[in-house]
Image (cartoon, rainbow over all chains, first blue to last red; front, side, top):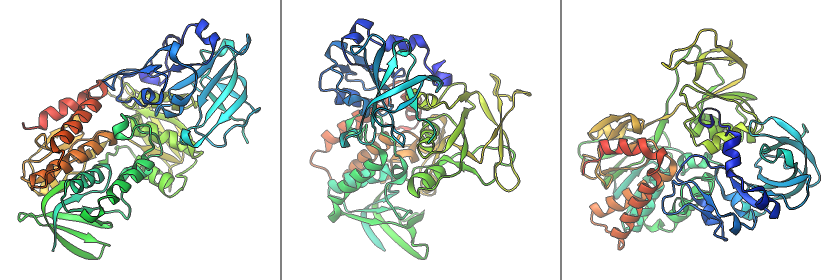
Length: 163
Length: 361
């Protein structure tokens, strides 16, 4: 399926998510890097020993969830933009999700934007909580959003209202 | 006549790295580039590269070009750069001829030659494939990322390899609508992370589809695609029409090898390496003594491996003419390991089998 359409199955996606108990403790990365490719910047980016690939750079990254502090540095370093951050510690109703977003115009804090799934289909309107774009992110800004819990495993992108 | 230790043809990722490495070994290098700028395709690659730290992974191609130029600048006493210079031939006496600024002929007499001429785009046959608005992916990238010109408003991307996927993403970043990405193969050829990031922008990817025809009077107005069965035969009645003013054809590359053929290098057609490639040894030396190769001209791969091949060929070519780098063995082992690492996974499988066919040990 993924090999034909570029869309992972829900099962594939959910396998990459930590247990809900870990998500509810605080921010943690979710890496959707399903195919073995020669690439390892995520492991270099992580200073907390939370992402492992090892000697063979073709292996898929493995996350040690307990070591991840949710610093989000790896998100902007992944050339495949395959990493996002999920934080379920903030509310019962919502999770905070941080995604890399390389399009202009960038949204601004407080904006309401369209939340999209992995096929670019509309899920719900989501609130922009934060936009970070320091020089160290090298033109891969990160956008933190407030997403309904029920869409946690579906949400993966945003679209700004037509300007 | 321009005398030099090593002439390098092509100033892309492989040629730049070959120049750095040969100059670092103490060889006098003449780097010959037909464009007015060095960097080759790197100057159009606005995305972050894959690979590991040593191949500048996670750095954007446009910035890698600057990093390499800076490294080259560090060896400027050993490097002569000739831009706007097209190499025209290599003759039996080892002399290379070229033309600078499209008006003056030059002759070079190098002790060794490194051919890093890269690759050329393949094209696709279908009715009206010569209509304006139908581009190769390289042209679209040049327009967009070098000159800042939008190639059109609505695009059909033909090819779901890494280039097709990356250029689709860059088109969207430039505000151009990509209607769909199609590929004749049953599966997406490029990295799935690239495919997913475009798919979640709402762009459909249709594998097992190809172009039936292009329609338009004086420019592209419509593209018609159809589905292929498992024997790659088109299925009547499966046609879909797109109102697009751009069709971007990204169906692969072939090694640019004319110079190697002219020099008498033994060549072999190797599908895994995308075309006619020279037989070579592990030092990237061809069957003609002192002619070396690096990058896509000896087998189409990613820019990451082209850079490492360049470093390796620069090192070994210099050693061959007596300019031996003080850390020769160490560096050589490192480059070989980097190439093995880049090619060791499932995506490198066909490259490995292709290389097995051309390397004479």
